Length: 46
Image (tube, rainbow, N blue to C red; front, side):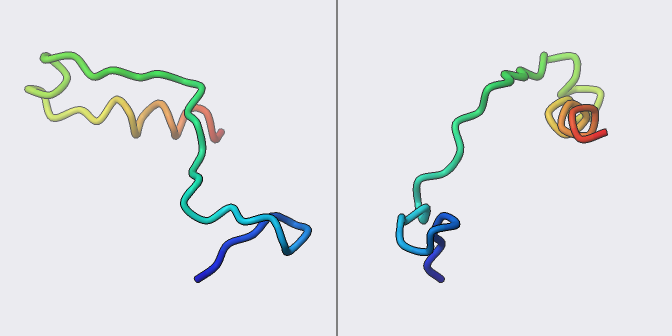
C-alpha cells in the first residue's frame, strides 16, 4: 500500500512519526506487569 499526504503525491510511506512524549517503564512497572506506555497513550487520547 502506498501512503501519501492529502495532496496525493507526497509520499508518507516509511517515514513514520517522531514521538514527542517520552515514556520509559521502570523495572517495578515491568515486574508488576503494567504497560505504562499504553496507559500514557490512553491518557493522551482522552
